[in-house]
Length: 118
Image (cartoon, rainbow, N blue to C red; front, side, top):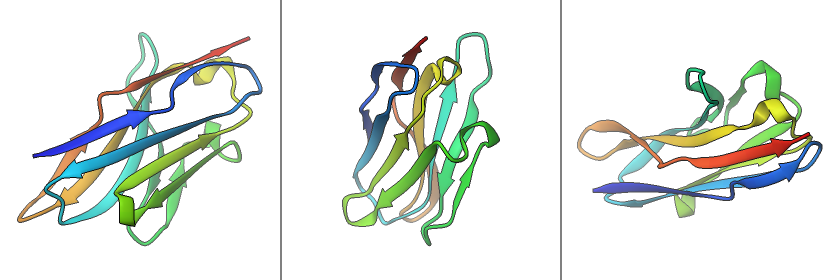
């Protein structure tokens, strides 16, 4: 059984910063992709940032230069450092990990609310 637990969400003023974390626990062989998604009210869930096991990163255009994804493989953890936050960044943020044991599955965190006030 694998669980992903997120932390670090909250309320921040525009221009501020937040750091999200997501830790995986349970039966874990290896973790390939670690990703952050977000879903704003009335909108589809979208990929915000991704990092491979080798450390390659990819970002959604609107967050480039403001968000940084990183991972700690020893702790099975992924972080999302968010700076220069804007009201349009308000959403529930979810982490997702692609974890291999005998087979490879994708697991989701429970989500953490990020609210940016103007």
